[in-house]
Length: 282
Image (cartoon, rainbow, N blue to C red; front, side, top):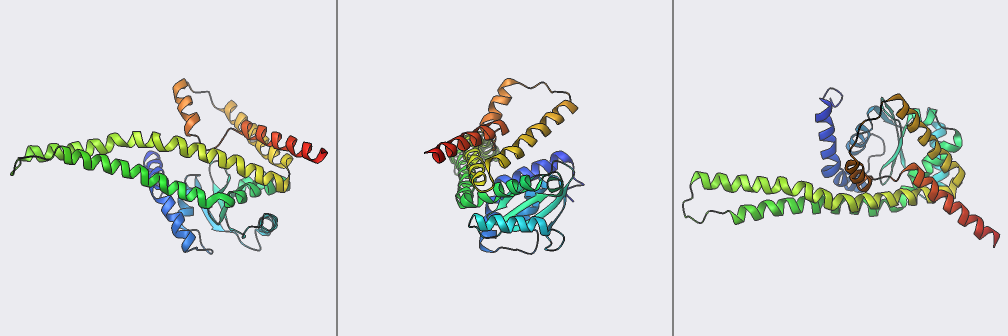
């Protein structure tokens, strides 16, 4: 059904799902996990990656991936997560969807060496360490966002409340239109107010996950994965003509991006590697 939709409508629905429903679906799955099927939360997250098919990993067909995840979960003292594998027409990635699900694209598995695949999985597993905090922040963000919007709507409705005992139809329409206008105007303001701090929090989480994974599988393996991503992006950039973009658009994107640049992540890993070497020499 999602595939048959108008692309703009599909994108809008997926954005709404991320902003409103996913934190609460994640909370529901924490309480009522479903280990043997791909849940609605997982389908929504994978749909944003262009997934056309997804299934829970098979112990026989996907034994190598399952083996890596069991090994790394044990090393990191974590409960072994549910493993979802998927096919996609777009970039195939790995992601940590909720407190206990790791999703891997088949193309990602095929294009990774064993060491790179272990590093990728270790990074996703590392998110489990602080996922409860991430979930609380996500839910708080949604509540704050909608609380302010509804508050502005109610305030406008109250301020323009007709004083007559029997208000005219025009007064009622004016009151309702003002309420809708206040709700709509509050949207961009609350988005800016909540998005920048949340994005900064998410960027730091990515750096923390890199650091945790690097300690387990080695910093070189983590850097190799990121360098491969840089090479992939550069190759894609040469295939498409560069678009003219306003500088202020790029400036805003810098503050609302949820992942640091690959170069920033590599530099952070190199710093940690140097610190480890200095400690070992003491």
